[in-house]
Image 1 (cartoon, rainbow, N blue to C red):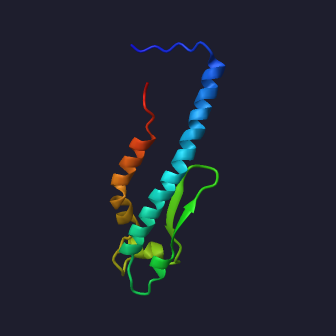
Image 2: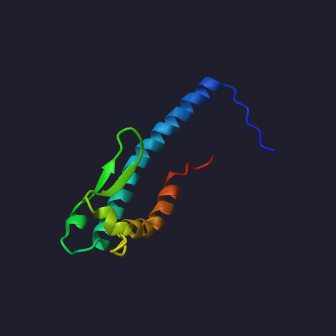
Image 3: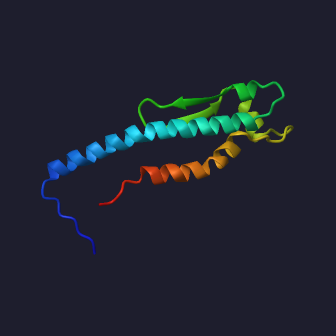
Length: 116
């Protein structure tokens, strides 16, 4: 059994908040880098017919949370990604995310605080 005794709860709470802020400061640039990687991979995988889907791929960062979205804003991008009854799927976002899985592992390891 593992037991923790907190002698000064207020100091402990302050340290937890400080760790959270530090982790968020470190997380945002890492997420931006990962988003850029996924966006570039998606652009390379996107159909090249007119280039509109490829050119509509962008990164959107959330202001209120450490998050990043890679989206294709072309009106028909979802039809290309998932297909329709008459048109087969030509995925470009999902494969881009799959190719970034190794980077996600590296990111997770980088964010794990060392234990003392």
